[in-house]
Length: 418
Image (cartoon, rainbow, N blue to C red; front, side, top):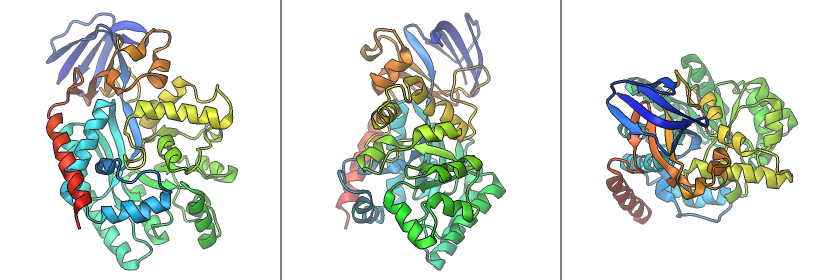
């Protein structure tokens, strides 16, 4: 596949972009080349596509199902009971639905933790996105479940070896309150051996911290450090309730943090100590969490809330400016997952967006990034390209009507099931 984008704005200057196979081959004032596709970039700007660092994609089926509740009540009394009814078919259609939403809002890579992994892989393969995917690892401190989960993850690892290189198999131990020490240690050992990412929820609530101290005499980050779990391949979602000592431990082990401001605010989980994490030099990426707790997968919206939350909470309007918030969802996300992406540059993966500069929310043209973060919505995104393939153009995704129709049927059926 080859694409030539003519007369598009790149970093404030009008240029042409040549894409061959899955990389940006060249960017310059004028390019003459025979390509499979030509795109008129007039009145458009090219920006990197977004990296969603923490999702539960198929939970799109549960959007609006259980709102305005405390986290543990929400999980234990609404979400987990409903998830016991989930089938492979549900996860396939739910993930496909989530992928559609992400493509239409500019995301081309997501880090997912959910059930029935093969169906998530199938959805990603078919729709053309990138994903770091795992099967949730929960054993609830039961030895038999530990054995089952280890066996399952070993099998899934082997099965996904034949998947597209757009799919990363990861390990997903859910949290310190749902996974035994034996399983956490196995996950880290297996991940290190096979060069895999480990995706975990960490210090999301005060209750999680209090319960961990009561059980282990250590705070969650301290506990994971003690058992040898932390490392540069660990992506920790939330990390809201961490103290100075824990921040030093996260930095020592080069742990990556996935910040989820909308979910944290909605569930009143707390506020990420972003200023301290930044000062420590920790890579902070941006995630939406699942649509049951957000209720959106729109990364532009997440950037805005990330910026506003830090400003308001710290009473400092200069904290987390628009450009920095934008980088959380692009450059930092790419860094967290080892992607050669996150910026429009020669040699980078051809994962990019074309935005409509005539869109009302992007005018006047004082500062494009500020407009994107603070005023725009997903509808300013005209084209989404991933791995050198056009996934959306003129805001249309192939087969989107059928994807939405199927997801609605599945969602209503899921809730009605006995």
